[in-house]
Length: 276
Length: 339
Image (cartoon, rainbow over all chains, first blue to last red; front, side):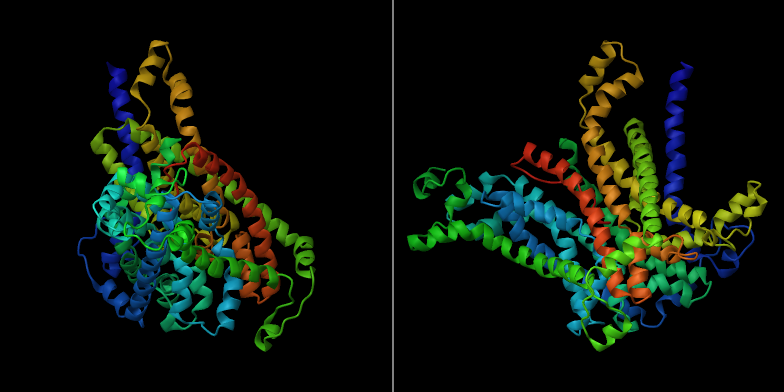
């Protein structure tokens, strides 16, 4: 049956082409980062680097303030995601498990907040932070990032909390646990995967945030990695090897985290979508 | 269960809440705690949202009625100037040109993302498991790529000298492309920006759409085949109705995300050349912060937010309908990562 043979070939061929198209920019980033300069600045591209070098990574890492910026980025990301998980845990528990007046309205508030146009609010945020005399500080960044990721964290966690069977909690309480103990000993362990998956999106948002830090933290030592990376090319001229090494260093944690967690995260996030 | 029944005073349909703490605290206190508990749990989240999101929004509105340029900024003075910022903005030709540009930019990207995403999602459903995993890995890596890393990589891919895209085009016979400056014209800059946005956005649509197809029962297809439906007809009568709710939501989410996209546009060429690739958020930023007309920038951002609100209200109506459909448990499809 020639038709079915063709029918089997074209999806696979298309998939292969698409795979190459989607992976290529990521591949090219790593490829350039490991290539010696002679192979980067060459009239014909070198598709597979023959003599990989760590030289560009050394340039990137030894750039001024690099480690300060790493520390800044990690600090604001971890704190913002941690705070928002803590605050969201209470909120999502109330929204998933309790019926009370105004519940719908509050859910709506978080849905709207999730789409808040932070990108166009930077002028007002700049004025507020300036009047509080906290420009070039990590504190406002952490607080704003917390609220930036909070709505999505609440909305997704609500799904995970709702998925934990109510009976478990009730029987724990029948056995003499207080409500808080029931939560801590029964629900929380079951929620852990959901918490991890939820935090993934918070981590990505905070790690990537660009417009706010662009306007708030002008001091070289108060910046975060996205701002540094956006200027790296200007700072290093056309040193594409070092720029790509910097981009790789910035992207690797997120790529690994995403590959590790995406199955869980996507399953959690799409359970609503597929219910239709 | 029986314990709950005798212990809890009847509170209608709120059994879990009524359970409370098993130890016997003073009854009066218990009643108030029961009623207030959900609000107490929600208080930190609501308070933080009000302070760090609500207050800046209000401030943004107030700034838009002020004459606030470099002088006033340095001297910390507040000069109200009524609706001047709005009349100036709305009567400027540039504002309308930028708005139109934003609308077209959003429309083109969303159409491409939804069409390509749907096709890839359907392809994923057709593939064997190994090939599917391979394509999924490619999609997930593109999806996960941090924005600023992506803008940097795209600048390198499309670099004038030694950029791999120009080399490939020249090899294919387009000799004039050998040293082409992609950020030199409006259209070519938008092409690079859009290609990058499509590249990072398609995986979300494709993967979620594929997930949606896995829930379609095989029997429906068999029934359609028995009725003599061809591939196209069974797609139209079985697949599409299943995917439609997801596609509606995805379309609106993409519209909102792309309309307010800032780093994608800004980091590639800062709105250049000649401010020809400024979309509304970039325009508000460049006018407000770059040119230090903070009041005007705030007015532009208020107008942008109003447009977004109009778009969102439609999206929220879609989601709320779904929320009512399955009230008890809740999880929304949401993209995260890029929100």
